[in-house]
Image (cartoon, rainbow, N blue to C red; front, side):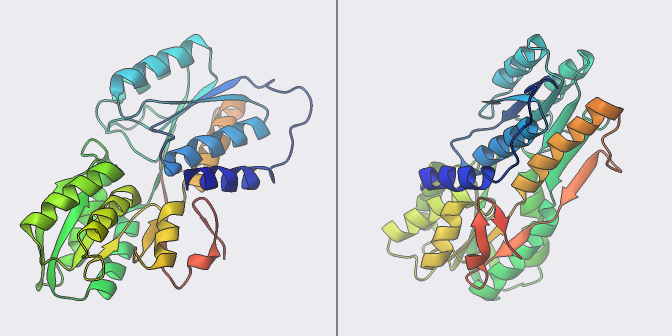
Amino acid sequence: MFSTTRRMFLMAAAALPLMAGNAWAQGLISIIVTDPANPYWFTEGEVAKKTAEELGYQASVSAHKGDTNTESTLIDTAITNKSVAIILDPANADGSIGAVKKAVDAGIPVFLVNAEINQDGLAKAQLVSNNAQGAALGAQQWVEMVGDKGNFVELFGNPADNNAATRSNGYETVLTQYPDLKKVAQEVANWDRTQGYQKMQSMLQAHPDISGVISGNDEMALGAIAALKEAGKLEQVKVGGFDGSPDAVAAIKTGELQYTVLQPVATFSAEAVRQADNFIKTGKTGADSEKQLFDCVLITKDNVDKYTAPFTLSE
């Protein structure tokens, strides 16, 4: 399925205008993502790269895989390579502050995408999905699918990523309005499909009577679906996701996943590069604030056919 994601992305990228002569005259933009093995982060890196190249920059994409030491080394490399800007999906809300500061001290502007750090004023911009808004959308849809009573479980993302808590809190705000809905377990699965599968197996053993699973992202949700299918319980248990990945969309079409909340990663990844370009040329990003939120969109069986490319929903 991931090879299909690559093909879909490359078809969309082919529509980008070709660069005029004097390629790479603008310098190098270093793009650091989490893990391109995940289609979400693959799209993040490739969209940023294509946008940078369209604007006349050389662009490189690397991955820290959630490790702050690797992230720090990649920042060192970006500094050594005299990058004119860094686009970074930070590994850790607190642990990435030092890496960002190191780049800034070297005179390189940093633009954060997808996740925030817990310090303002270092990065020139922090562009993220409106996770609270997206979580509320998802939780409301989840209640429609599951009903307003019964036992359920939650799969929680990486605790070092503020997005995990923001989504979980957003779910809680909606679901606590239904006193007959009982959360009987919550497990950390670190955004990972395999961990989602394993944690779902253990939660099923402890709570075989659940009627729903609400997940912090699609990968964990897809892992849960695999465990539920294996246990013969998928027909009785409704699962909701978050990201808008191609695999999640395919699962909605087959009826295995009830919905996903699409994060506009292609939109804010491109926008981060455009703001970097503005800053390089004018000293300003062109945005009104450092932290910028991009609203999410709900994908269900009713609008899934409008999904046109990775993490894009047509009007």
